[in-house]
Each structure stands twice: as structure tokens, then as C-alpha cells.
Length: 85
Image (cartoon, rainbow, N blue to C red; front, top):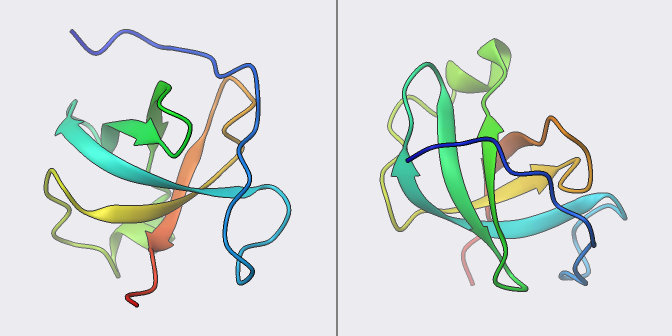
């Protein structure tokens, strides 16, 4: 159900994001600080949360909007919650 998926193409995102960041929505938790995410362009990837970020994001639930770096690599990672607004 939570197989690893490698993203092939990047997505254009908002102005406040760095060039390698995209916005995504949490679809479901996969255990072990990993989550299935739906990127802005519709693709789904599995992304991990680094331990230093996990301390600040202790409650991630399906439907949350997050910032993701490395969506084109084999190891995308969640950087934090997306800005509201």
C-alpha cells in the first residue's frame, strides 16, 4: 500500500518556496516517519520526515498541506507545514 514511488517531474509552486520545493497534501501515514503525499501535479510519492523537523511537526494528519524537497529524487523529505493563506 505504501510502496516507494520515484517522482519524475517537478511542479511549479508558490513564490515563497525555493526552486527545489513543492507543495503536497498528506494522503496517508505509512509508519516510521513516512507519509504518502499527493503533489500539486497529481503524482503521489512517499516522503520521510527528518528527525529535526519531526520535533516541530509532531501531529501530521491526512489532509495537511506540507512543503516537500527532493520530489524528483528517490528520497523526498517533508520540510514543514505549508503557509496558510
